[in-house]
Length: 87
Image 1 (tube, rainbow, N blue to C red):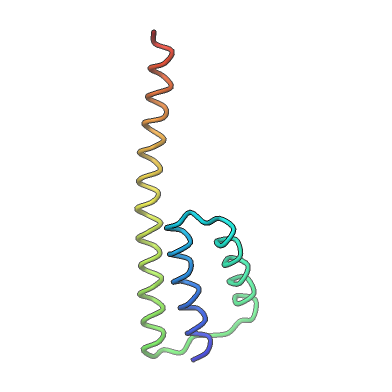
Image 2: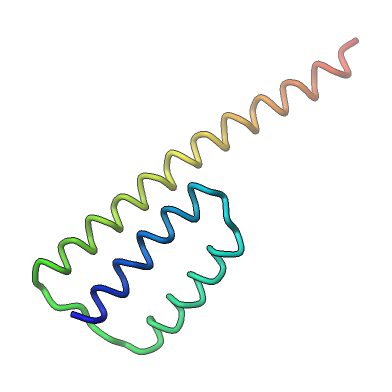
């Protein structure tokens, strides 16, 4: 159960750090995930694993929505930049 709890905590912290645009914290969490991945520990197929998958899906949704928002901001920036030179 330890690995499931740790992974769940990391996913929760990642969603929070991403929402706060905390790049230092995201980098730290990434390093923790690299260490966990290198350990080759496997999740059990119980309720804890299902909760991990739900948290993973939540993070995926946050990332998809953020990408859509970033794309919209990029389009606005390009449009504004183009209009500045149209004078």
